[in-house]
Structures are given as C-alpha cells and as structure tokens.
Length: 475
Picture 1 (cartoon, rainbow, N blue to C red):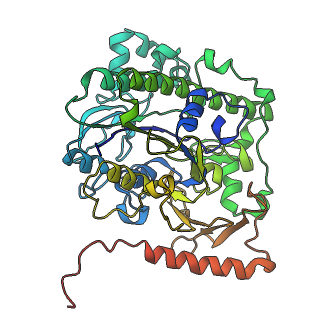
Picture 2 (picture 1 turned 90 degrees about the vertical axis):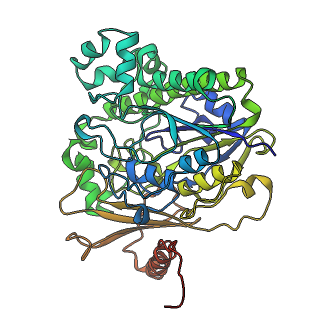
Picture 3 (picture 1 turned 90 degrees about the horizontal axis):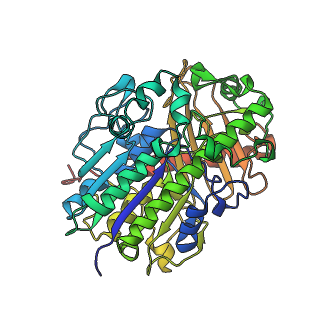
C-alpha cells in the first residue's frame, strides 16, 4: 500500500458543536459538512487541556500534560520531546506548517523557539495581533497590502479581526496552504502539512461580510447554571475572564452576548470557506484520493454557557470537547459517525501508523484506524484532561482534573497541598444531564459514585505516568 499524504487542519477554540454536521442548524459550515459526509466524524473527541499550549503539546507528542511538561501557556516545550512531524520527516515525508504553533512562549512579540520539529516549510505567526519579526502574516500583509497593517494596528486590536477576507489572517493560512499544495511541496515525496487557523479564538470579530450572515437575535441563548452549586472559581470567572485580564460574562448585556456568538459563528464560517478552497486545491492537484484530511480544534469556548466566556479551568464539554473529522478515500467509510471516547493524543499515532512510519516510543495515544476498518478496538471508556493554572494565572493557583466516562464526568478542583484553595469538585450524570447543569458532587445520594470515580482517577493517573524509559535489569 502506498503511503498517504497528510493534511491536518486545526482551528483554535472551536467547540464541538460549532459545526453544521454536528447537528447545529444555526451555523453555516458547508465545506466542513461536506468533509464529514465524505469521511468519518468522531462525536466524542476530548483534548488533554482546555488552553492552547498544553493541548497542542499533547497533539504533537501524543503524551498527557503531566508527562510532556508544557503545563501552561508560556512554557517552552522541552527539546527532548519528539513531535510526530519529526517522525514523519525521518520516514521521508515533506513537512510544513502555516499559522499558529504555540509550543513555546510568544509573549511580547517573542519568536517562539523551535525544537527539531521536522518542518521544512515553516510559515509561523502566533496570532494576528503581536508585532514580531517572526510574524509571517504581518510580512505577507506588508507585501500584498502596503500600509494596511500599520493603519489597522493604530485602530486597535478589533480592527485586524474585521479586515476584509482577502487580507484576513484566516485567508492568509489558506493562501499558504494552497501555495504548499500547488507550488512548494516536494513532489517526489508524500507530505504532511499542518494548517493552523487562529479563528474562532477571541477577540470576537469577523469581517463584516461574514458577520452579516447571522442574525444575532435568532441564535439560541446560552445554557445557564446555578453557579452557587458549582466551585467558587466559576463565579469569579463569570465576573472576570482570564483571572481578571479580560471582561467577564457579567460585563455584557444579553444582547451583547448574542453579538459575540454571531461573530464567533462568522469566524467559523470564514474558516469554512478557506477549508473549501484548500480542499478544492487538493482535488485540482490530483491529491484528493491519496491524502488523509483531518480537521479538529485545540479546545473549545464557553461562549456564554454557564455564565462564562473564553476558557480556563472549566471542564465543561463546550470547553474540552472538539470537532474531529477524518477523510481518507478508500479507507474511511463515508458518512460514518463514531461515538467512542477518543483523545487528542490518539491523532499522532493514527497518522504515524497510516504513514507506515516507525512508532513514536513515548506516545501514549492509540491508532484510531480499527474504528473505521471494523477491527476490534477496545474502548478505553475514559478520557483525561488536566489544567494546572495553565491559562492566565490565578492566585491562589487553580488546578483541575477531569475524568470523563460515557455516562459520567468527574472534575476535581484540587486543594491542599496542590493549592491553598479549598478542595471542591463537580460530578455530572452525562446521560440525563448532557448540559452539565446539575452538580452532584455534594449530593449524598451520589457520594458512592463520586468516591468510585475519584478512585478511578487515581488509577488513571498512575496508568498514564511516563514509564517509557527501559528497565535494564532487576537492579
């Protein structure tokens, strides 16, 4: 069997239900819906962290947060870690990237340091906002739209979010990806290209021609909860996002929250159009039949649900569950929907196995291919996600750990000795309460269930420790 090329398309902060194919009738995503119809959609894909860098490190290394060491945004990945793109490059793949990477600090315009990542083509831009000598999007804007960047930056952050499509960051990622497919790839080798879109990350702004597609008042209102029944950090996050760095949900009117949702949906629609252009270029190059296309996102977005915005220590499904679509003609049956619990650490082993490359020795994920090939795939029946004061830093620190099974979700809010905060938690019956509104943690009727899941979590943490270092002998 010939080795397939790989196109990994990843957005930033796209929740699992921000997709027409996932049953959302309010969002316009025809190209992603087409991709799902031509491949398989995984309806229960969970990331290993609810903020960017720890989650993305799990994708690239196939390792849990407590092992790869990128425990927070602003932490540089260790040069000792192995990315799946390095494995593919060693196997003869031509690897490239356009857009965000976020496996090291880019604060204040710092150029994110690279390890031996395997990328021959590296068109990096952490985000549209920060001036940086390494921001390839800004260099592209200056070449194609002289003076526009400086004019836009002078107007403030929101102005660059609302640039017309032809000058937008998302369009730039599409352009770079298409250029690779049509011009700069090594035609003598299979390729692995990663298109990392920044949208629908906040700030919440989209080009007017996309915002006009949505009637904010017609979009469904957020899911509400009684925050007094949940850990106190959520009431804090409702008042102030990002540990006080940004306005909270309570700073907005109901109409303004709906406007945020309309812009968020508009950003997804812009990405969808760029995905359509990329898929068309793939087909025009005659690569469609021999390429695995994988679409996903690094974490979700609260979007007003439970009276919160953005992300952080929250482990609600809207923050930790993401889209996952895989198209591979002749291998993945079209239109399939898989409901098994899968994790982001499973993606790298899946791609490495498809490429017939050598296994990553420290990978902790599993090849998903048996799910679409009909082979036996023992469901692990749990997923794990970790937050270690990983976003904007709280003082005292906030550490949460989620264990999700098919029917239940446990979230431990760690206390002493991990933090001076009080120990607390969440327990949800996901079968009867999929919106996670009723916290059963303190309900005596579910005490046995909570204790059982806490014990299960301890076992999972032991089972997922890094014991890849070989044991030479008995002593």
